Image 1 (tube, rainbow, N blue to C red):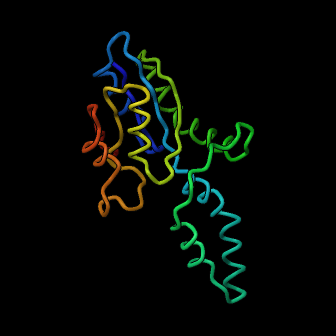
Image 2: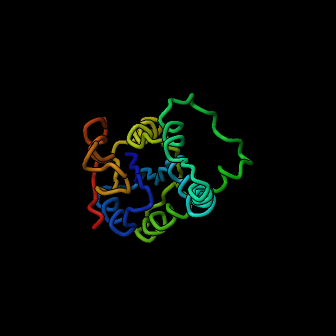
Amino acid sequence: MHIMVATDGTLDADRAAEAVGRWHREGDKVTVLTVMNIPTEFLGRLGDSGVKAAADIALEAGQGIGDRAAEQLARPHPVQPDPPMDSPVLRALASTAATRTKPIVDALASKGIKAKATWTRTDNMTARSILAAMEQNQTELVVMGSHGTGRFEGVLGSTGTKLVRRSPASVLLIRNG
């Protein structure tokens, strides 16, 4: 069986390892998949410095940037190819993903379970990205937190709810709190 642990960085590592340990059998493959919403992650990192500073300067000058930025983000954009491997953005995202994945991989290792760590970009379609990774890896069980960091959870439906509805594999949701 192939078990995938999907996380956005909020999944409790010990709870995830305990859940996987209940289902894992000798010979099973385990993958820890960190999902990275590139627009949110990238803008979030910039937001603390550059974007906030630019917004403050614009406001001081009596101009707003919010409507224009929202209009740009709302427009459908063609899918961009993955950044080249030497891209600073890609390296920063991979580093963040590794930091978020490591506690789960370590917790699994403490239970004698070897796990492969990987990450994927979500482009604001987290459930779809996880489903694609599940299909690519022929996943039979996905383990994830029931409460992530999604901004619209409870309004538009959480990633966990979408996976439960659409997944061809079993989904195990772990309560984070």
